[in-house]
Length: 360
Ligand SMILES: C[S@@+](CC[C@H](N)C(=O)[O-])C[C@H]1O[C@@H](n2cnc3c(N)ncnc32)[C@H](O)[C@@H]1O
Image (cartoon, rainbow, N blue to C red; front, side, top):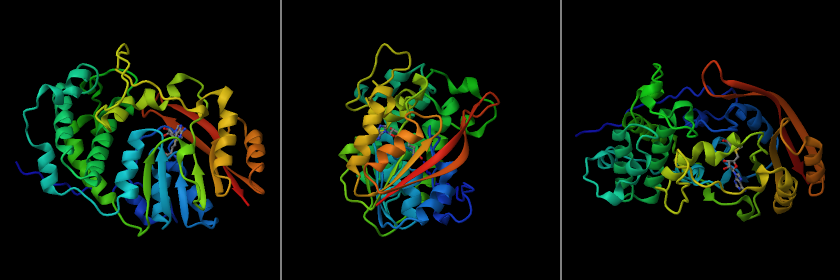
């Protein structure tokens, strides 16, 4: 079998004017609350602030981390979920490692797997994807264990982006055979394996060095070491419904990022969800204290908080909290529409987006 990495560049992200060209190589990830579409504004704002080192404390898809890396900053990218951490390991802390054709061939090689290596097939048959695709995921994971950590992060990221593209609506809340949703869209037409080869090429091309010591970590925001010049914060919002939960939407990606190692699966749930981790930002009773703790923790850095008008606590409360730690607090405002889903029934939420900036 010969496998060739396809050349899929340029990706036509159509990132806006003035933004570093490197952003055209960012593997855009369909992620709830992603700030990808606000990058031009965020970039223009960051250009006005003096900093060499930065934290992206709730990195999610990694769009803002990648932007700051492309701006030449030393970036520490963090998230409490593992799969965003793996995505940023591949694109932020990794500066040079890519997968070559031999690596790809090795991963795709036909293998006879023993029962303990068929976890995905056994657990998710009839829930997500086709049986052949589930077998493919087990097989690739078997090979991934043999790679170096940096190569692993590229291979897992390629698997994650393939998995979300191939999943109807990019959500793992309901079970569904992708064959049923075939509507001509390329992402649903390609098999996971076809996506995977393409995604390896896309992640390879996203790798670059900005000659800084960048980092990626996985943990609670308060465990991030202090001391960086600037901290960008984009925490989750207190949800209007349970659907806003990151784990509920993306549990399959979270499990896939670590082969479900150490994850508590809710066996009674139809889609074999992973138990929801606690975050104080998601509850009315704990959110205000969580913001206070957050600003206190990073009080010595320039603070940049992304926030929106439909969230709790309200803008005045947040400004008041930030003022206890920073001498100057400025609010920038922009109209923004969030799109959920891709079809005509997609909900559109018009909100005002804020950047709340605290400096000494
Ligand atoms: C709004 S999203 C960030 C989106 C990101 N800025 C982007 O452009 O894709 C919020 C993220 O915060 C993470 N998160 C939630 N609670 C956290 C905590 N206590 N510490 C660190 N990350 C947390 C979630 O997993 C989620 O990825």
